[in-house]
Image (cartoon, rainbow, N blue to C red; front, side):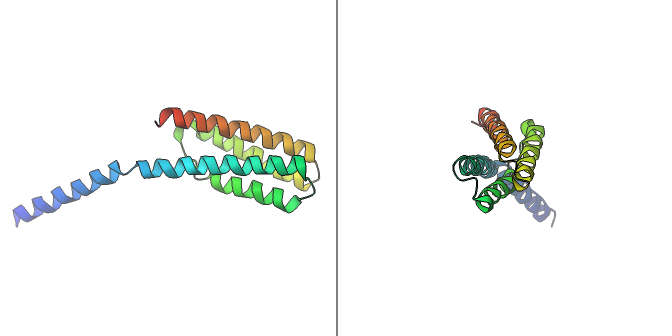
Length: 126
């Protein structure tokens, strides 16, 4: 019985260590979220500059970016992510109130923030 307990504990520890080694799958998810958020913000910027009358498309792109950015979690850029998300929110609100110029400026600022955050993430996760 004592040997069985040792075997179960050893197997449990082995299972935990393989879970720790499986972390790169999480890195892929974080990287995909960053790339997706950047792509959606770029889409929103392009829509604002080419077809500002497509209000629904722009708001959907901003909302999609805000959803994707939630998965872009990295301790080194967490405060930057929160500030960039605030810029996305302000941009959406400005666009909804009809201030296209302010909305576009905030979108571009958020885009620059996300590109910088992704560069920081990539530099620390090679």
